[in-house]
Image 1 (cartoon, one colour):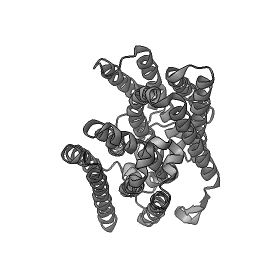
Image 2 (cartoon, one colour):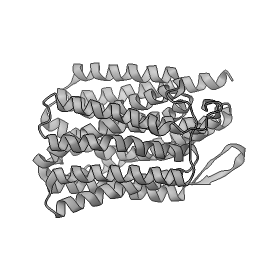
Image 3 (cartoon, rainbow, N blue to C red):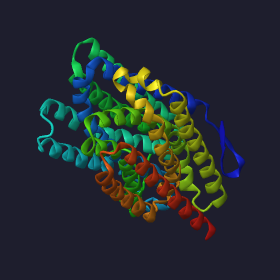
Image 4 (cartoon, rainbow, N blue to C red):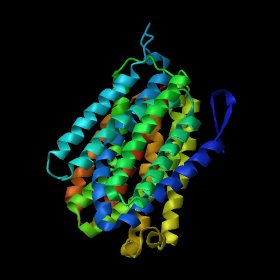
Amino acid sequence: MSVPEPGGKLTTFAPMVVLTGIGIVSTAAFQLLVIRRLGPEGFGMLASYLALINVASIGSSAVRSSVAVGAARADLQAVGSKRDRTLWESAAYGLAFSAAVVVMLFTGAYNSWVAGALVALSVIPYFIFARAQGLMQGNHRVTRVLAWSTGAQLGQLLGALAAMLLGLGWLGVLAATMLTALLGALCSTRDVQKLSLVSFAKPFTPVAVRALTITIAFTWLISMDVTWVQQFGSATSAGEYGAIVSLVKVGFLVPTTLALYLLPRFARNIDDSKFQARALGWSAAAATVSGGGFALVLWLWPGVITIFFGSAYANAGSIAYLIALAYLPWVVAQAITTQLTAQGSPLAAIVLIVAAAVQYVVARLVLPDLNAWILAHGMIGLAVVIIFTLMFRLQHRSR
């Protein structure tokens, strides 16, 4: 598989496909291991604290995109500067998110300070790791980015397996997650130093902040739907919905992988309308095929839900393909979001923030009716795709 580059050059995706496949298997194996070995109560405790790490991962993903854009775009470089400030910038963001985690612990919703400490210690390494990946991505070391991501996924799986074998329970799994994050941050930072990958982009620039906002808002939209079902729906519906979404999100790996390749190229070739349109077409088509294929599999074979998650989720098979269809526009939207992130589009940021507010209001109105929520979530995603497509067409028609 290959994608056209400016000037007619072709780039192979074979190593990316292999690494992505290993990452999918590792993530699935981790989820199945902890779900089956910990049981509902233990996994429930682990999931509640992993949710805090997921909040941090929203910010770290944004930092990776911001650093990648800054490294790729010459117009964002600080004139005369020879200092790479991205390490301190990412650490500052990480510290802010760590403080947010501590505040959440004080709300009383979490009762284990040991687990809370493990989570807080995981947050800053997530941001440092993301910064290293951003430098690799912005300098077109995409295979290396995927290698580090896959290594982290394998590390989390092996750590969880060791915790299970030692009988350390869910706290042991959480400790393994923290150690994986710390080791990944240290080793990836050392790697970019050896490769002399730096960015002299000015910290906290408007473009960087807008890129952060776009990434955070989009990740919020495809993450908080599970939280709204848990908060406004029934406990049974929340469990079934959350399990299916964890499976459906495998469809996001195709546009996510393509984004690693395309984001720095979108940033470097903002004025090349033909490349922008061609690359976006490839990405959107691949996202549609992957997301649609997943929905088709779940429609034809609903029993796969029971195979993955056990007989307790047998009833969820009937709505699995509907959730996959609702997520299809979001998978396509992510492909378009990559191009808008490279631009640091202020309008895209506004659209996503408004969509997040609409998502919350709709959740309050329709839940606990799960079928109505699935339809509404898909329609919000479709509206985002239509608006982003119109934005892209208008931008490039005017050039």
